[in-house]
Length: 227
Image (cartoon, rainbow, N blue to C red; front, side, top):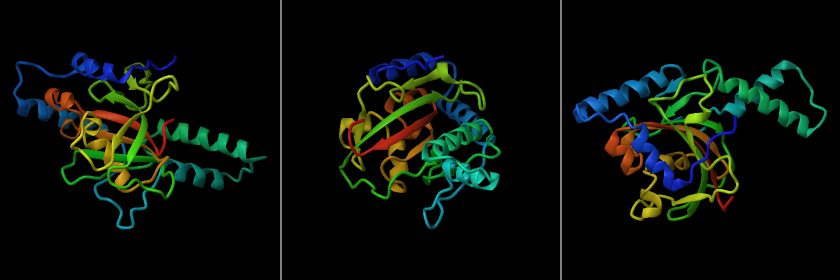
């Protein structure tokens, strides 16, 4: 079934509809609920609680390429090789025990990153415009290993949807603050064209997520120019 795609302005409305907010709960209780659902997600994956000293992250593609090499297969051409890697990566996505780890990439344990592909060596500089396409999932409804298509929202699968952007390391402008600080964290370590999964707790998310204490899983690809 085709993934539901929402324009960016609808994401805010979705947060209201899917929020775990309960007027009968204190803010501390909402934070406890958030921590529980995030920990429940992470415990099903490999987690590394530090950034590698050399900033070399294990990616899903790295694992797929190693698995292909160890299989002894030989692709007829580059296209066949890429198709084989895509298929292995799809299988890894469904098997967290073999997939790439989630790395904690901030001091407050609000952002965890799983690298799907590392992208190029070129990284953005402060105030550079970074375009991105994404899908995000409310972790209160996300089921590891299941088809979560219907709860995903974003612009990743529709080229008719305009690319979104932020200004790197600049959180004083609305273009950046509307998405929160968490989605920028991977680019302190990775370059353009990188693709990641990121768990972002509400404190590193948009203002609405902060208010309703909702954590999200994002799948994001970063670009230097509009895609």
